[in-house]
Amino acid sequence: MSKTSLILVLLIMLLFSCEEGFLTDCDKCYTGPDFSVELNVIYRNPDRVPVNPLLTIYEGNISDSIIISRIRIADPYSYMYQPAILYKDYSATLEFTYDGQKYLTTASACPGVRYDETTCDEPCYFVYDNVLDLRLRYD
Image: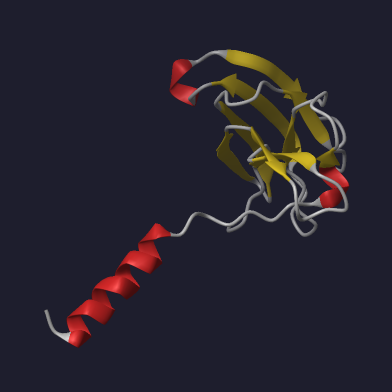
């Protein structure tokens, strides 16, 4: 094997062997194992205010049709949180009208937790992948 081939193989191995990096938000870190898991539902967009939005949260895939909650959001500037269970799949849809057009946005999440010993001042538990982003990005 030539020197160039060996270097190329090593670079490819390094490129594909790295784990996905995580950024820990120390403000959302829990020092003990007793913490609550919530789905953070994002539907607000500063330049597009949805009219009469209907939020539906599903357990598992949307096609499974297991509805956890269905909420008509009265205040489009509010925040929404839904209690969740670790390592369980969740999906959501948001139906709304914007500028005379009807839209349906979807998102999914599977909340997990990891223990971080080095990033923050003290070791802590960090919940990740708990965001359902239902904002309209393009119209």
